[in-house]
Length: 555
Image 1: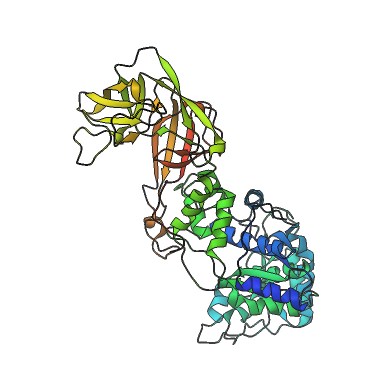
Image 2 (image 1 turned 30 degrees about the vertical axis):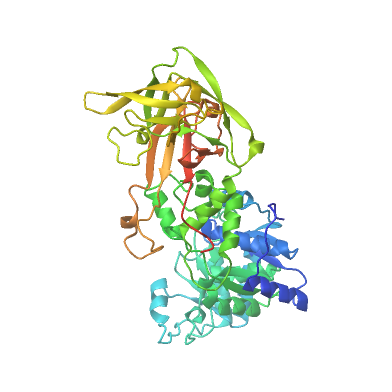
């Protein structure tokens, strides 16, 4: 059921409950489910829930279903269904059964008929606004609807006519008859069915009434034999209604709901509504924009499933509200890539260097390790000739003290190559430095055993004659603050400098790089080949994460 690396088992309160239930015989087999609504793309908060549900069932040799909560046809689409399945599989999980709430529409309808027959539900003519006005507050009880005491036969007739399509959207709803004075507002005669004349992505136009989440969800769990219905803490107050539906609908299996704290990450948007706004308003390119916290966005940026799973395990499962530092997520992708990613050189902001004493027309191949921490990755050969590119930041005409890179009269080492010394600076008409003229010392070739003078600076470079043009996309957080899903004017909080695009060069051996290939660029960080925009003419790289951080996950 789970395809993944070995993992350390750590305890949490839900795992303890499952263990006790199995040992006591309360359940014979654990059954969990991941129940997303197909109205958007999954984000990193969903990754925590996916990992919890699938790994919990896997550890106790149970099963996990993927069930789509497709009860709102106005917002749902097969695009989201397919994207969610891709995300779950990419994370490394495979469900036992693929289910849809729409699979159970007929049974849900018949269970609603049963509630009416028992006097536990009624058809109400009040509008949504009127129902809100009569619901009461946390300190004041609600008021009964004038339609609450309709007889069973009239309710059955009206509900059948709702199904038949006789009424307009919002004209009537089916409500549970519980207690309008309950201190739990969720029990104040909640709506069970609403009218929506909308095309459903699976059932087409077969239905024009659709069950509400709080009604459909427990019935789906019961039908599938779910033993532990795990959700986030915002549903804790809904649990009494969950239990009421299971009991009053006379479901044979009686699952139990357990809640844990949702994932909150600094500078990260976790609201699907806000994420959709970013896409709809063109703030980001799409749902899989590398700046988005969606699983598809993280994948395109260059995150690995191994890193996300490790992150989800590390943050743990509890009922206490907390906010996770985004640097913790970055820590795990560095840890995952440091032994996997080939190390190579890229120049993001090129400055041309002409080595005046290197023979014109000559070229040589130099050996370079692919990953100094993983010898199994071997070596590669990189070309070197008279003209190269270095980073603009690696040269200063008037440097401060303790600047050890290139400046007039100073000598540095070119990584995997030779010492070079800056002899002349060439500027354009505006005074901008456009070229450096340097000399090299042929005795200082890397690996030659040269033991003469020392230099304090080492810079990276690419050979100008064979360099491959590349685009580099550098990202910063989308949010300017750390207030998560704040009530501030949302778009005012968006970072206008969340994306920087640079044009530079990479080594020639990267010309064949393909989407999702990952590399560590010397001094710049870890980069991923963008699968959407890379073409035979231009390789596009997304920076996954910088090389270093002071963050300590154990601190």
